[in-house]
Image 1: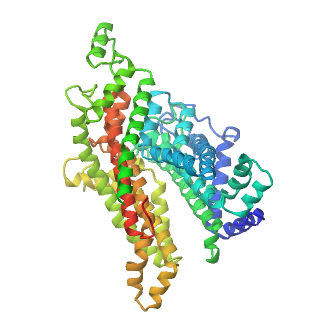
Image 2: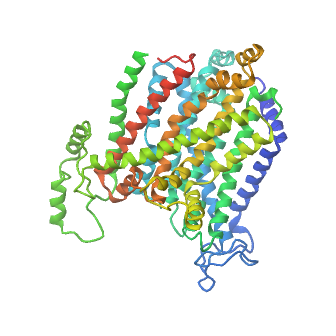
Image 3: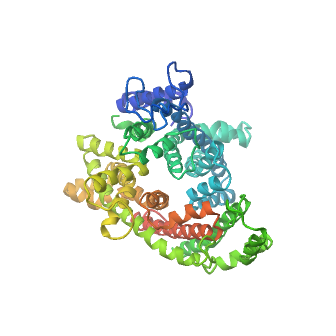
Amino acid sequence: MSPARPESLWGDALRRLRRNRMATICGLFLLVLGALCFAAPWIPGLADPTRPDFDLGASAPSAAHWFGTDPLGRDLLARVLYGGRVSLAVGFVATLVSLLIGVSYGAIAGYRGGKVDEIMMRFVDVLYSLPYIFLVILLLVFFSKSLLMLFVALGLVQWLTMSRIVRGQVLSLKQQPFVEAARALGATDMRVVFAHLVPNTLGPVIVYATLTVPAVMLQEAFLSFLGLGVQPPGASWGTLLDDGRKMMTLFPWLVIFPGLALAGTLFAFNFLGDGLRDALDPQSRRTPA
Amino acid sequence: MKTFLARRLLLLVPTLWVIATITFFLMRAAPGGPFQSERDIPAQALEALDKKYGLDRPLVEQYGRFLVHAAVLDFGPSYANPAKEVREILFESSAVSFELGAWALLLALLVGVPLGVWAATRQNSAVDYAAMSAALVGVSIPNFVLGPLLVLGLSLTLFWLPPALWTGPSSRVLPVLTLSAIYVAYIARLTRGGMLETLRQDYVRTARAKGLDERRVVMRHAFRLGILPVVSYLGPATARVVMGSVVVEQIFAIPGLGRHLVNGAFNRDYTLVLGVVLFYAGFLLIFNLLVDLAYAWLDPRVELA
């Protein structure tokens, strides 16, 4: 990647991404779904996801309730959209936390090098060997099952790979002339790292972040299964699925719709991530997208 | 090579110590204790229980004693089930968990690797797209949904297999399938990526130019390096299988380590949780070391330092 004209990389990447029809569709799908979930409270005619209707009970999909209702008579479409707000928020916030920690940590370790690097990366190795999901379980069981704790716990365990990726990139980048030039012009270390080195690592970082979002969402679903996710009456796709699977034979729509929403989103993120990798990888430039 | 092994083995001890310390203090910092429950227990009885298990001593002393005993794998009795030593529980349940995990990983490798190689040798063909789309669907379905679906189809509708428990060979099938699905998919993707990368390398072209038939080029020359991403994934994969088995053990009511961890955490069963965490951590560390050795053996360019 050419540090002199970074725009060309992004313009080029975007063009190549657009040529990848499947990745484009996945990106649009995510945008639409994200917008719908985000705008759920303002969609006219959408039922209140927490208002029960005991006379109705569990009903199959109909004109009034497109996705049907759950045993308490709550509208499933509304619950899926509101649940999406939580699931997507968990995915994005935890990824953001991991980005902030991982990128700074990796960049500093790679730039400093030597003993500092050795100690910092040993520490990452130690954390890597932690059965971290246990740590998340312990954190959630012992302290609080709040949404904030979920964000923090999931974000805290995701930054390790990110820091390794960034460190590797910085290690090879810092030998390049543009870094020396920046230093010769009197740029401080902070400036060299965050204004010159980090922007040049963004390609792999973006790709990895795109793949982290679905991984985190899957973990949120996994924690919901253990009863550690979002607490009722709130709901995420994970808790909806967990409720649904218990009544799968009686009311199959309760597992089908949240399942499609989660699986579709994960699928789209993974596909988009693959597409981005192809688009940003200079090596693959020779092969047609 | 020898210094590499020595260094890594020496690092095992401080790593386990850090993990033990974090877990110990995390657990003690949390509110609640092993003997508190909804029922009213007389204060005297609680005191007596705390005294019996040494929980009335200063925290630092408890920590010291725990470390000394943990060094010889003695974690004391489980608080929730005092008739049993944690060590016994660990040995019994780890056998079950390892069997489950090993079958799942083996199945994932046996299906995922050939699938990936097949897709890579037919890049951008219908086979490639079909295999990779199937793989993506595989990584997109949470195993706690897949498990009940399999149970519904194969045991409650067709009555082919038992729906739960860990009793005979046929009871192994559904849990292993449920656990391995996501790794089949992931390993297939990694294999395909690694093989594509390797097949464009010069030495592969040389092998082809030498007139070797394609089968030999792929299987003997490209495969050895193309499989590397899968090898380095085996470390994290094992860690994730461990995590997945927590779910699978819950779904199928399998008495494995994961179930003990979750139940132990909910019960504040300090000794059991510490035992399970350290046991897993030790296992993962040793496994990762083995993965690094395998990596160096496959790729002669890698130097172990």
